[in-house]
Image (cartoon, rainbow, N blue to C red; front, top):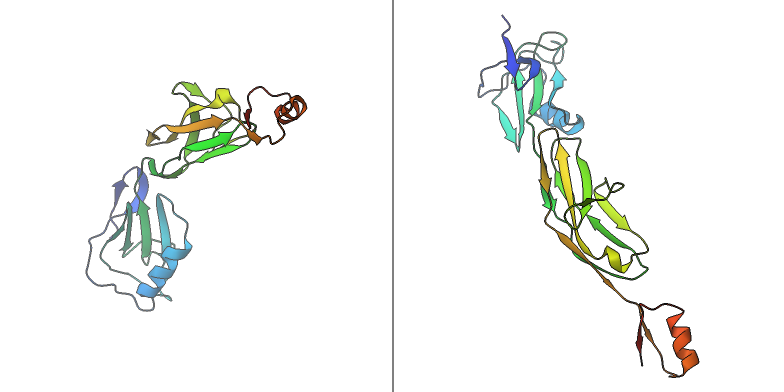
Length: 204
């Protein structure tokens, strides 16, 4: 007799009683490990379905790995001979590596990136100085080109999924002027070094 129930909103998840042994005629823990390595992560997925020829009616204890539960059901599957399954619990976004401060010379490029973990899909939104969302900055990395002084300030990213959101701590972009060295201190040399720019520093 098969018994089924609802678990975390997932339909027709097999209910089972953990047992200390894995009972199968032809399939053991090696097949379980191979299945775990090959099947992409989903909220609930069948890693291996027994059909009698490759084993039947498995019994094994539950195995936790992070927020993912692995186990067996003695019935169910395409042949009703049991399955090895995986159930991934929802995970709100967590920042593993926050963006780091950057210093950029005027006219150069600067980039920020964040490494986050959470139930996919993750959405990213970068902001500037607390309240200014950067409309086009919706990836894990933020790339700024031709940096200008008015872009100096605090940057942060909000990461969201269906289950929650997290905001990175502010990271700072410092913008410094170009420094040129002039050895021949004449008006012509100074004009050439400036190149028409007023925000460069001249070192004599």
